[in-house]
Image (cartoon, helix red, strand yellow):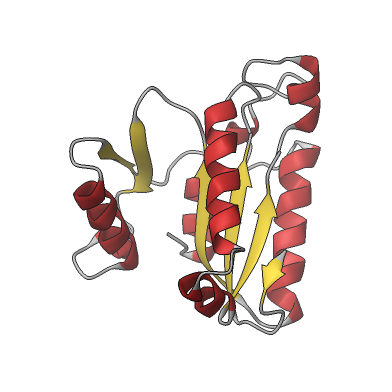
Amino acid sequence: AFGDVAAKRVLLVLGRQHPPETTGSRALMAFVDRLAGDSPRAVEFRRSVRVLVVPVMNPDGVVEGQWRTNAAGADLNRHWRAFRQPETTAVRDMLQRQLDASRRTLAFALDFHSTWQDILYTVTEDPARAPGGILREWIDAMQARFPGRISESTSPPNTGVFKNWTYTRYAAP
């Protein structure tokens, strides 16, 4: 964790739910390094946001060379509703403690994966996707910076994946 310990807004950054997704892990670390850096923009950001980072969500799956699962054979990115896996339960509980500690809100959540393309998986109903919303501005800025590379894939929040849980539980883009 880093950023202002008294901040009312939290950014949760999560990675490596699926063990072989090493490019997602590298992107996560570059993103976190940038947020923790000395640039004026990063310093300003950290003045108002507490950043929580879980860089390796599935350590036993990584060590054991699993494809998409932990040592128990569960795809962690499908267990954010029932919370029957110790990894998802631990992150859920840690986040709730952090939010309760200072009456914070989860302002944004990022879950880094690896795919063959640069895709942002978003929740269809999320108002942050609408024009003027923080998510729409971010996606549009990335599309402008990397023309033709960034795509968005939307879906309703009806499955037990991480992005849907953070949206339905905390209204976090």
